[in-house]
Amino acid sequence: MSKENLTDEYQSNLSNDEMVELAKKQYETKQVSDYKFPTELVDLPSKGLIYPKDNPLSSGKVEMKYMTAKEEDILTTQSYIKDGTVLDRLFQSLIIGNGDGTPIKYIDLVTGDKNAIMIAARVLGYGKEYKVEIDDPTMPGTKQKENIDLTQFQNKDYEGENQVEPHKNEFEFTLPTSKRKVTFMAMTESKERKVKHQVEAIKKANRKLKDMTSRELTTRMKNMILSVDGSDEQKDINHFVDNELFAVDSKALRAYINESVPDIDLTFEFVSEETGEEREMQLPMDVGFFWPSE
View (cartoon, rainbow, N blue to C red):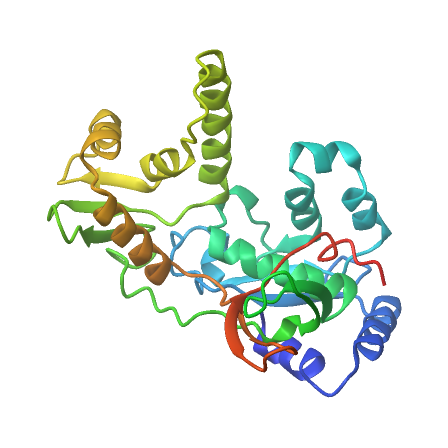
């Protein structure tokens, strides 16, 4: 999220109500480019380094407008909620371009950049305060109410040093046990949609065989891995994932992927009111994230 814009306004001493009021005032008075609404620049975790130079996303920024009643209509459309597209439709409605006036292709976004857009959309729509009830990990069965400041979450440090080359979505890793060399990509929205369709198709086919085994992990791996020991043939990649990828190597690869690809850090410090213990937790997202009751 843009440090220049959001740090000054949202990480100041303004209360949530004051910040929402500020947004309303800006909405009434500010005009940006050809749009009759205010916008903010969001710094992408990837800094644009993961996209080809000719891709508008290589600017490392996305310009987003404030949420209006139009976007609330999207959020309450039951058909979108049912088919799981509601948030993607929301983000596409809010994104103006790359900050230089150039439209972007939403399906090109890597998952980490999309996560940053999600946080920005929530802040620009309903303010920085997120009220949520969390299961206390130190006291099983106990829930605790939290009021989380969403502007505390920052992009992870990323300079593209693990990419095979700048502006190319490709990384290398040697598996610790088998010593096989794999190249992989950070998942994009386009790839995520492909995985979703493939998993649904497999589930439908296996239902007839009464096979309830999830294939999501292996399907995702087959789409992320670009080559194995130099072979980029899909049949070789599929065979490797299904038959030759040791569990210990799979775990190591997933850990390396999480460390290497750009993302926003969504961890926060949870302090138990019951025990006083501190735990680092991932930001929980319930129905109140984009459908706040207050």
